[in-house]
Image 1 (cartoon, rainbow, N blue to C red):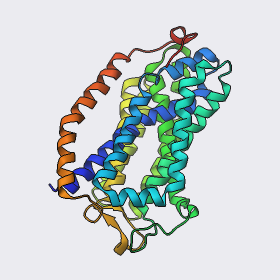
Image 2: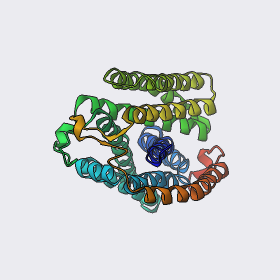
Image 3: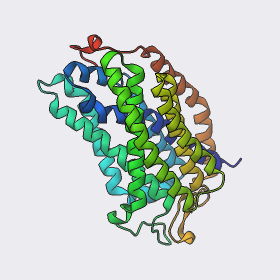
Length: 331
């Protein structure tokens, strides 16, 4: 397998890990004001992601860095053409991190909770808009420069993609809270998850159908079907009180949707409306020497990072109750 293909797959894996892990962080942030009836509830909700949220964001940093190093032309075109949406995502992520760290240091947490809500909702929606546009194709000239406007990116298909990722991540957060909390908070999270699963199945199914019918590859029909089955499985498992299976099924759905998008993208990395101007794994890639060095670095350090993050989740695996964090600092 050529190194360009290896790094396309590795970048897809990094985005998959980011969406699976940061996806429930986004969902928890959005659900905080909806499920937290009082301060004790809200502290408990926030405590579920307190030890892991910053580690989950590392996947985004690595995905961006890997794209810059392995496919600099893709990175340049993407960040120049999608400048405003990506800037909004960056600002939202910064505000979200500040809100998590400082809400318990302030006399009033309401303002921080609203900031956390907005800082979680915007990326959850805009990542779907961005990736839908990437898969659909954007106007590029012969120099691979984006020639559209912001309104070009806000097309119906991209907006449907944003709604799909938003609903999927909120469901992911509800299932995570069902898995990590106990008592009345867990019960409310389970009810919310049941409702969200139906909405996500409809919206996500519509997005996947639109993706496949507008040029999806035959091989990705299987991953699209697996995504729908994962969401349906999460609903069924929640109805039966199988919290672990419900969260796992939805995680599979997140993985399957990401595989579907990247599978339809290959071998392009930034398709253009005029195929002659598209960026692919060959004309967007770094030199073979750069890719070789990067590969060895990834082989050495990736297992260490995965082992550390897995250990973190194992340490903080216990369910939380209101009494655990009703009056304590949680992050």
